[in-house]
Image (cartoon, rainbow, N blue to C red; front, side, top):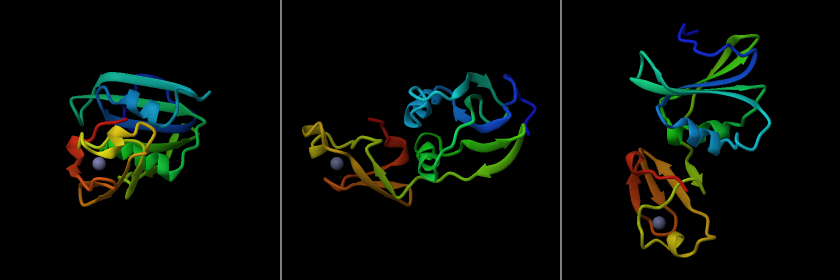
Amino acid sequence: MTKNHTVQKIKQGYVIDHLPAGKSRFILRLLDLYKSNYEVYTGRNVPSKKIERKDFLKIVGAEFSNVDFNRIALIAPNATVNRIENFEVAEKRRITIPRLVENIITCPNLNCITHVEPFMKTVFTYNDNTFICRFCEHRFGTDEVTFL
Ligand SMILES: [Zn+2]
């Protein structure tokens, strides 16, 4: 456990840590936490030893799927995700960008049909640090990702 606790420990739930500063709001949206009734503690722009400034989230009593966790990797591939039981880290979850990314990110190609048809889902396959749009086959890297 890190000693860098600026809010209380939680008894049970998840701690998502080492998010680049400013990214926690994307995670809150991605995991639908604005709409949930979970008790959530957010740290924003907190000094960190590992990265200069970080955000973190502590979510009490939450359950997430592997799909949810892999979506976190789209926003913060180096995030730390720990499951907490009885105030201790019970499990460190590995997060990886999913191979199929649906309706989370936008296609950088402005001529892509997904920009013309507003109700169309975006679909990308991900492999070897490259996203490929299913519709226009445009390829782009993780540094070009923008969210819907
Ligand atoms: Zn496209």
